[in-house]
Amino acid sequence: MKLTTKARKTALAIGAVASLTAAAVAGTAGSASAATSHTLKVCASGNYTAYAEIPQQGGITTTLIAPGKCGQLSLSNGTTYAKVRGLKNNNPNKEFYVGTAHFSASKGWSGAAKGTSANPSLKSN
Image (cartoon, rainbow, N blue to C red; front, side):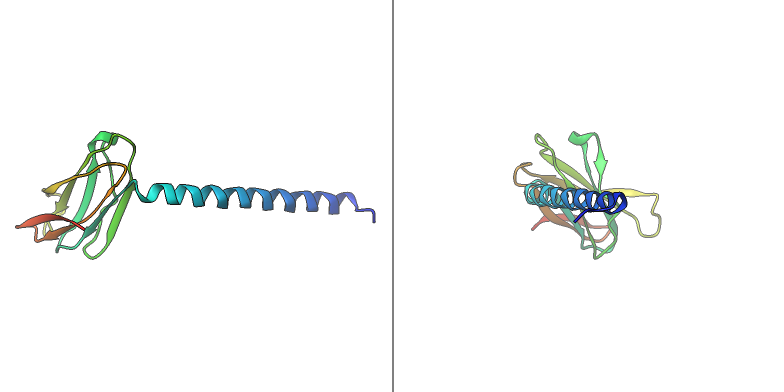
């Protein structure tokens, strides 16, 4: 059976997309399992918005984490701590220190910013 030029180009395009999709899925599966142990996860379990900053990674931060929600960042080798801060409910321009999470980058860290803005605390899970 002889394919027309258009049919041949379509078949090649479908094959290329299928190959790229398979490669992307395979790459994502490996990255996801590798990133699991190198993750900082912070939940805002108090009555305030929280976020975490990793000074050893150039000061990158999580997004702002609303009460009842969680945020996370991937850790690079050599990262050993993160500073967790909160924002005052009545004045979001004022932040306060919640605590420092100490960890091994190979194990990561999971915990929660708890309490109130007047009496914050940081707890490991």
